[in-house]
Length: 59
Image (tube, rainbow, N blue to C red; front, side, top):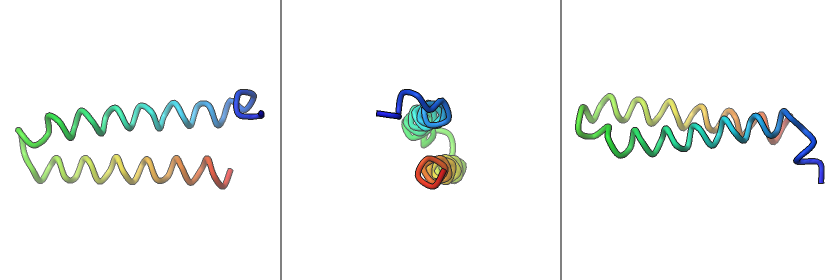
């Protein structure tokens, strides 16, 4: 299995994990401050996640 040997994939998965954690924090604490800013932040996080998954899949 080449997953553990490719540092690019491992780094991308760590970034994806960090973004998932950030998504959870913003989703939990964001609505208390401002709904529009929360929606913007969550949208930017999701776009970043999609970009990282694209990089993982297509190299």
